[in-house]
Amino acid sequence: MIGTKGGQELADRISAGLAAPVRDEIRAFAQRLGRSHDALAVLFYGSNLRSGSLEGVLDFYVLTDGPREKGLWPRVAYHEMEIGGETLRAKVAVMRLSTFRHAAQGRHADTTIWARFVQPCALAWAIDGAGDRMREAIASACQTAARFAAALGPGKGTERDFWGALFRATYRAELRVEKPGRELQILDFGAEHFDGLLPAAWSAAGIGFDADDGMLSPQLLATERAALIRRWENRRRMGKPLNVVRLLRAGTTFEGGARYLAWKVERHSGIKVPLTPFRERHPLICAPVLVSAYWREKRRRQKGA
Image (tube, rainbow, N blue to C red; front, side, top):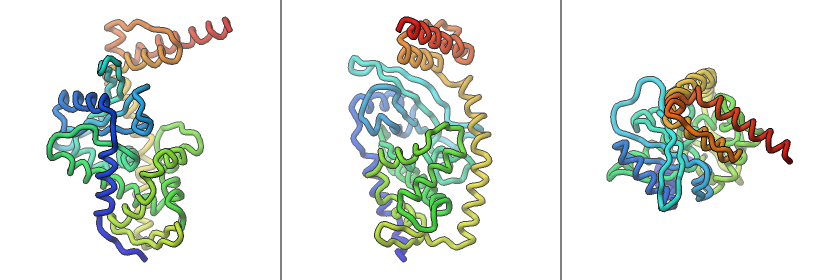
């Protein structure tokens, strides 16, 4: 059995991951977001982190100071910025670092924070002294994910087996409509990130394990496994209701949502739908107009083909 070695290996991995190279334009975007929200730090994640592209919609988490929020979080907004002569677009989630860390520790019914941030992310901007707090929060997300992977995964398997089991379970607990095998794409895209992450996180979390020729066996007592499964079942039952409420809330509070929908329609159909001040203020009312415009344009092009 490999004993618990503490969190130094995990801390080193997280430090390296958060320091991943990010394009200057993205750092400039993150800096503006951070300063406008009087934030502690801004995390950058998602497909554009993997590709390095500026196309599409960038993904940021802006983390602010203060006590934990009550109610639903994060607040989400769509932003456009002119940087270097190019219009960059981003979906921006804002929440307090104390809330983020609480969720990352698995102390909330919501699974989205630790399931998202056990995956690759970069620290795109931070004030002095915030880096250590961010590393601790991401370490908590990795340890929480690793604990549930130990309980939800096989008795013995590869790292990929355990992560795959975990992500399949989190997808089923949310409202995401993901194609079968989506979890394998995540592991393929982040292969270097995930290679060795599970044993490092288990060690930091105090979970002993056996390792033999690439096969891992977590050493959980029956009572420990049962307790983790109970905790997971509570989160699974709460997952979809939480997502529904969050989506309904986002439909009325997603700042810039109408502009986001208009851009999506124009990008996919080539048709530009003008946005009135009323449509800007009421994205739910605006949405059917934009969607119907998209389908009209699609039918017109199909007839002309």
